[in-house]
Every structure is written in C-alpha cells, then in structure tokens.
Image (cartoon, rainbow, N blue to C red; front, side):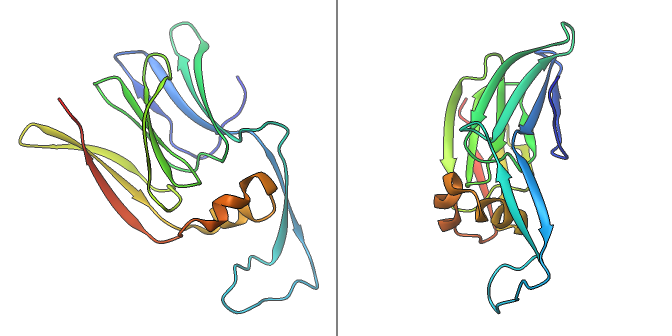
Length: 175
C-alpha cells in the first residue's frame, strides 16, 4: 500500500475512508566530525541529503477500508508533518511543512480551500463547536524538523523564508 510515517491517520465512518498523510522522499542523515556550531543558526550535528524523484513530497491518501484500496490522492510539494482531521461535513484538513492548512473534499480529494499560516503546520488540528457553530483550530509553528528538511532540498528553498513562529489559528465553518 505504499508507506506512511508517524503522522496521525484519521477514519471517517461516513465515507469508510482512512485518511493517511504520507511523505515520499528519501533522506540521509550523516555525522560529520568537523561540523562547527554557529551561534544563532540551526545545528543538529549532522548533515542531511534529500533524494526526491517526484515534484511532490507530501501525499494525502484516502483508503477505502471496505474495498481495501486507495480511492484518491492529494499531493503537495513539501512534506506533510501535521495531524489530519476529518469532519462529518465531508471535509479533510491537512497541514503542510511550508505553512498551509488545506481543506479537501472527503469523498474525492478535491482541494476546496487553503490558508497560509505563515509558519510550518506541524501541530494538531481540532474541531469543536460553540453555540452550534463549528470551528477548526490549528496549532502551527517553527520546528527543527521543518528547517532540517528544507535545508538541503533546492525545490523547497523558498519555504526556508517561512516565519518559524508558533501560532494557533481558529477558523469558523459556514453552515
């Protein structure tokens, strides 16, 4: 079925789909004995190399648990490093490493909406209601892994200009 990582997967009982965020690129960490720490700069003590053969790195898949097959895919140019959320209103929310939160149609994966958070979306996405109105809250912020991933990959270099501040953004859903 391909692969997935640590990112939480979510199941929607209405569609019978399991939504699976995946990253499809290879990465090599290598220890370098003469790597020097520079104050104020990212330092992990290792170097990284990326081997991405495709233009996209992140892929959100809908897997039909009754038919045992992938029914749709939504691709993104940078990794998917956040939680995924699905709603009873047939939406799936996914965050991206370059700072977007995206809503796709739960049935067909069609992108319906996106918002640039201005910082990598690597935290949780939750839904709650107040007085009958539904809200989506997104925790986002600068992460070491985002900076490491972006560091050596030329196609992701623009994402390094992202602000790595921490934010919580709340959106109200329309009726």
